[in-house]
Image (cartoon, rainbow, N blue to C red; front, side):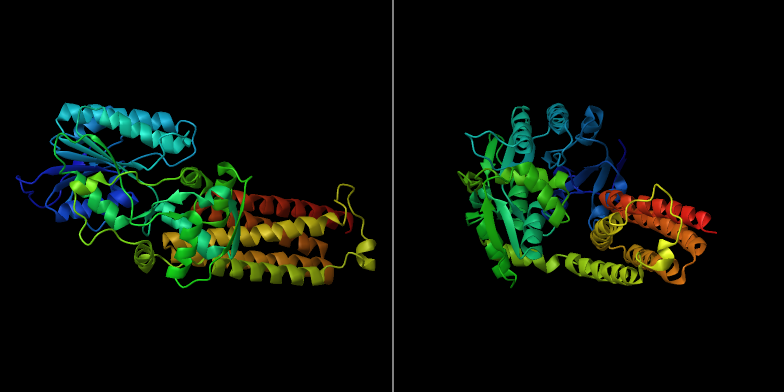
Length: 475
């Protein structure tokens, strides 16, 4: 682990804080609040480069290390008064529980050894008498490990965090804005107590100054208890949108629901799984004892105000526009190609075709599926470019996309209308190269999109082989 101090001389009287997960959404909000309240802040990250876009990076000490390394934890916690543990696994890898457990244990032992006086952790609200989803259970276990560390620990437990950049808020936003109607699980009517990000940060920072005898969990939640169905409706009202129609069914499991979320939102199915898993339970605060120690100026933010505040900084959702663009272009290419196609022409019937050519009816079926794939996957790639703010990459993809569709249409014209099999074979080879390049470009911003476009490139390769064989047999 290496540490890079800030350029200014720190106030030696200030308390020193360590924030793990500072590159994440919540951690990135906690750091500037600590700085504003006079803390000297050290942040832990795997790569210093991940901090470069943070406006406060020059005001903190950056330590490079991994929470899974006991040595890195000991070095990061040296000289620290209070530590904010704001990391947890949000993936569907089978070993995530073991990784969370091991990292929390290393952190707890190192904090005790370093003489840290306070640990603050953000966990998840949960019922006490139900079998929890694996991710929620893992967060509960991490809290227990930290509480048993021998270092006074405050485990704050929250449900849905309302803020631009919060994964749970993003899921709510995109489900509400992208779908005019949805089929949802019956537990969409479970009770949830959401909380605004500003209030979460206020409580997290305040918890760093709790009396040393306080070692416990604290439930935190906003002023309203709502169902997810009500949250969808209230989000729509707060942002001036038409409320989507929501129909609940009893057969949609968390796993199926997470894949459904991954399909209609930019949130991956792997990330959606723990988010959906937490909604299976009713998550309502059972106490508000933290308010005896931490003041929330002006009181908690209501749901509508929190939504409007989050949407003021949210990037526009270009998904529907991108899908309309790619769909219109793909449909135009498909229509022109279909109009050019003449499988019943006397010329085509006179050709000597290879025995391995698929039946004529197979082509419209395959091409319909491929055109749908091209439109949907290209829209996904454009969404990824937009999210990354890569205008140059987006424009380059659009050029490659347009070139590909032009080559696609041109093959039909050259083969069926111009009736030049050799030229069509050469054109098919160019189309194959273009399709492979399109899949590569999509894969650079979205691995799933690159994989999804691969069948198109493979089919174009087959079309090249078929076109070449027809040209050879009909010289």
